[in-house]
Image 1 (cartoon, rainbow, N blue to C red):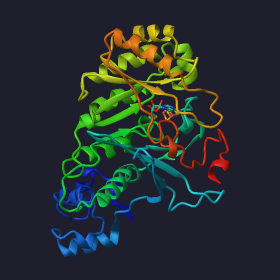
Image 2 (cartoon, protein in one colour; image 1 turned 135 degrees about the vertical axis):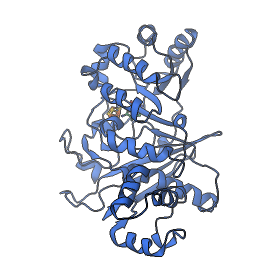
Image 3 (tube, rainbow, N blue to C red; image 1 turned 180 degrees about the vertical axis):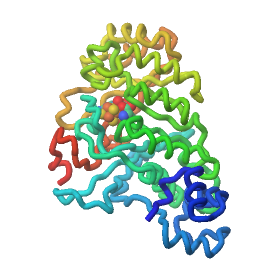
Length: 373
Ligand code: SAH
Ligand code: SF4
């Protein structure tokens, strides 16, 4: 069965052409599936009955299964989503799962979406990285996270799926589990659906992709689907970044900075956001702040300092609040806009870098049986 959630609008038009139907059907179907969240062909009233019947035979619109929805004291929500529902190659008898997080704020609601089951890049301060990598998510599994969250939040708010236009999810960040640029095609197709006016109609400025710095993919993204860009910098020199973000050995800081500037030629915003995790005694001294100013000086940017969110056996500690303030002030005095990310949802392990899901590690970095149990 073909899952129609895997297609963006042009791909859906090709599909309709391939079954002898008019390509404009793609727009109608995008509206039903994504804008209205209707997944039952029989309810798609402006599509001819004969076509609805044909679709029901050869296609499906299937979301991944939600295993658990948790709500934090601060209103943050987390969905644990089973992404192994049809495959039973799991010798521990446990499914793979990923996590999606919704963060409500006064002026917006941000959904943090995962792109992979685990992550192969093994950044030393990241619990997803510590789990190893299982597989890429499909387009349906990526866009499905938005559909699941949208449906749950709108349903709860009492919005009629078919009529209300108020957006609860106003922003999407590709900052959940996984490195989005190593699942390039599926992530780009899913983002195209987010931007499509017949689907979610989000503006490019409200979709942010965060990357640890896969330079060739950044160059491709600026042509294929330029959205707002966040870059996980985390260290002000190659020696330290090689340790914290090992992909730095392949794409060192100078190359990354040059790629950021190339990206900005096409980006919907005129700055890159550099993310910098604050690790006590590792990357948070006054000297590091001055070194950082040198590294970023040719890239128009904002800075987002993320207090390290601890997880078991990480070996790191969160920087002291006083050190974070000193670090921030040095950057601000140099004229930068600096935000210190508030930790949200840590009572349900929904904070940055705490997303773990249940990864069956194909890289065998760790055998995470305890996490699965
Ligand atoms: N793979 C992408 C996106 C996912 S991580 C990337 O690395 O950019 C989203 C952000 O959370 C990244 O900046 C990441 O470095 C940061 N992060 C990871 N683990 C963290 C932790 N334990 N505490 C705080 N931030 C963390
Ligand atoms: Fe992967 Fe990002 Fe975590 Fe690094 S910080 S291991 S790239 S998810």
